Amino acid sequence: MLPNNLLSILLVISLVSCKNILVYNPIFGYSHAKFVSQLANIIADHGHNVTVFQPFHIALKNTDGLIKNKNIEIINYYPDHYAELLKKKTPTFPDFWDSHLMNNPVLSSFLMPKALGGEFEQTTTQLFQDQKILNDLKNRNFDVLLAETFEIAGFYIADLLEIPSIPLMSAVRLPIIDSAFGQPSILGYFPQQYSKVAPEAGFLDRLNDLYRIFFWNLTTQRLCQFQNDFIQKAIGHPVPHWRDLVKESPIYITNSNSYLDFAVPTTATIVHVGGITIDLEKMRHVAALTEEYENILAERESTVFISFGSVIRSYEMPDNFKAGIIKMFKSLPDVTFIWKYEKDDVKFQNRLPKNVHLKKWVPQPSLLADKRVKLFVTHGGLGSTMEVAYTGKPALMVPIFGDQPNNADMLARHGGAVAYDKFDLADGEKLTKTVRDMVTNSKYEVNAQELLKVLSKQPIDPKLNLMKHLEFAMEFPKHRSQVPAINRTGLIAHYYLDVIGVLTLASIFGLFVIFKILNILRKMISLRKVKRE
Image (cartoon, rainbow, N blue to C red; front, side):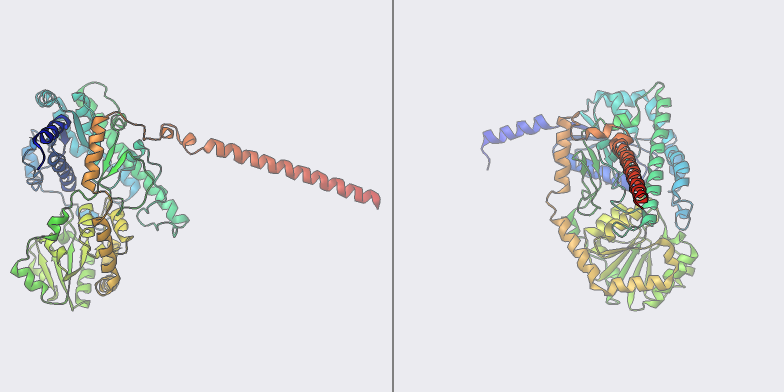
């Protein structure tokens, strides 16, 4: 046991270092809310006083229970139109299944900022005009505010409260924010959709990378600017630019994991905490499967689990995609399939062979932990990507939209997963060949297990990495020396384009002078030769 005087000293140190932290958790997407909630749990577990402020942009009903630490105070902010939000069905975006237009970078840059930003506008406008809640937050004397970077209202709340803010990103990366913290261009370091990764990448791959990154940056810039504009309108006077507020922080916290993600040049200010939503101990001791699932897994030697997440619905899949999958089912009679299918559809069930089980809900953690499940077919959301990586299970990644293509490539590069084009679901023969190979070829399981070992033994635990950097940032809220000074220059100076241009012109001029001299010497030699003759 510790001596009483030492215990007292440690207690005093703990009380002195305890911070009053406001976590801004806008409710607009489950994966975002889950990441921010888990971050709040970890911070509270380390002894800090945490308040989670949750303005509702949509009426998500599955966020209860995400905040597990009983010492966290939750302030739910329900806007006046919340009754209307409750009546709305949770959007399922069926068009994302087979629409080329929905994923078109050019169209997205024009359509998405207003479409997505419009979902934030009404609640955010009311919030900034609600002086009562703003005064209540200010009177709580918070030391710092942690805010999501996709919905940027939190930074303006911090500005009104006159406290520092620290940006968070629940996805792997957001280049326009990364660049504010010194990360150089990511071109060539990881492939964009439909590109090969270096060194196999050719000219068309590099052109595709440039095209897609340019328009994705344009999309996110316009989304932030759209929010900037309606927040300024709600407040009623000029406000700082969103980028100026974000880049004041000494760190930027992302949901990337350095041992899973592509290797990208970065700075010490960008803190990767991917994996904080994973509880390895809990995953090793998942709930036992029910008798129903035990019987299903006992039917055949191999079982494949299929789920496309909670946002995209399997039953809304195009008929030609379903036809390709059914052909694959019939071509693999020795494999059992468990398919998360969100609708009771007797007619569709009758089209399926006996080796297929449709389930509206599945115990995903327990299935992934079971060795009889040989393959997970998933949409590649970051939550599922992390979960499958930390279970060592081979995965067929079929990305549908958003960051899913990048997540699929990120996991596939480790050799335990395959990135599969969603439009090839209609090709039953190709799908059959791919699934059969992944079920029977042991290399996928070996590689997936190797990645699990790496993630389990990574040198710095993601939760520890989070807390060390967060506590450093709270002690030194204006420390920005780790951001390269060259990051404040323009494009020309940053990449030395002026120097390269001058040296190129000088080289051309030098070659021109040499050419002229050689030409003169040639003429002189020719003239002497003529005179001799």
